[in-house]
Length: 282
Image 1 (cartoon, rainbow, N blue to C red):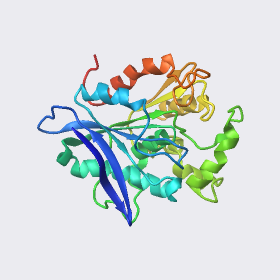
Image 2 (cartoon, one colour):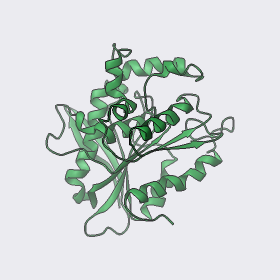
Image 3 (spheres, rainbow, N blue to C red):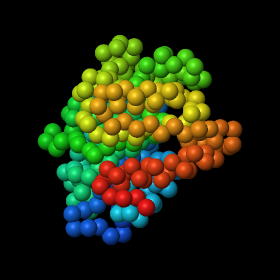
């Protein structure tokens, strides 16, 4: 079953929309869900998504897992951290509260996202309960089984990675996300998955970080360092480096074709999801 452009949250005159694909057969208690957030530097993009996700969607649907892509108020809509983080958490709350209407088991949700969406998936999984706005569901808890970050920044201190070719392009994105005080450590920490792991404030959920080693936007060693610090602090943080792979999982210099390492990682993504659901991936 396919549900396109259904509203999951109203923010004044703005309706936030989602798309959902469910398996052909849905068990009595509902099916689990992978909830995807798109990238775009926290400033653009939409839920129509990213072509790479369709491969995972079909693989998971054949194994009884639903797949959804959800919109949020990024900088293009005038939103910053507080708005987009509340929207992401409310997407989870929507399915936890009303998932049964769509054949979804709201207790079995896994988050996933690319780039800015990867950051959002980690932040929501770790501390989604911290983010609500005037339009939020005030009663339903934001709780998930785990998160997958694909080239998502686990910390926002890009100035600590001068080796990154496009590091000078990031400040504009961070100003939109964090506001005029974007360099204030306290402001940065509120948005950083790494901070919550280091302080032990993050929910203990497994996180899988896929990172292209030829990424020109998000420093490749950022994911490695995050996963190492996570493990040191008792978290299940897994690093999956993808050699000769760019930010959008492309082969650098090959006209946007998907890198072989990224194609091979499709199985790792689906295996991780099935593991969180207590099922085998074969």
